[in-house]
Length: 239
Image (spheres, one colour):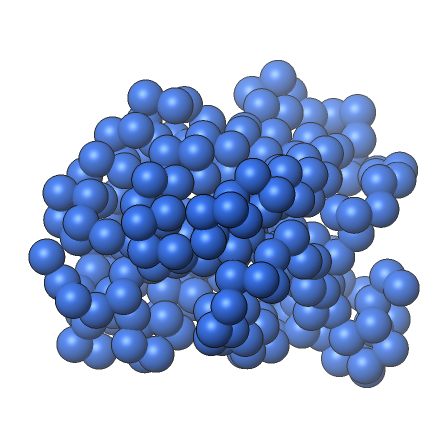
């Protein structure tokens, strides 16, 4: 078992999750990289993390199924034995109009967001309580203000669920010293259907580095008293 702090990142095989894994490894964390179906790209992230000198492992699971989550946490625990940081990043987004989602697409969006956060957080709590660890959930810039959505409705409903779960777990876990916070990006350079950067008051789209800085802030706070917060890294978008 490693003496270095360990982070578990869901949806770490690609996109923002992969970027978070690389950043954490460069910052001195050992990293467990969860993926659902993107094994080839997750293996690439594993090699990059290992090249920094940090330990890493791959964990495959459908986080919308509790048996998969319990197996993932058991495999993680047998390798590392302790967990200091859980980042619930996974989320499937289908760029389809409101009324066009298939049944499978609906459940993949909702289960990869709200359901995944619920099952994964609950299963990791014994490890996080032991370390007085941190949980960072990834939301979106409008998840705290429910409204009409023309695209990917189950994804947005799920992200609003993540907002509610963040506050609920923060309240329940504060007596155990586990801080639970929500980090929401606005429009990122990698977002679907981008318009003009002048739509953002800051005059540009967000980058992964903007979110890394927020993750560093949330993980470096010495006290678990900062919990239940919603940090929006959006350059003023959607205010």
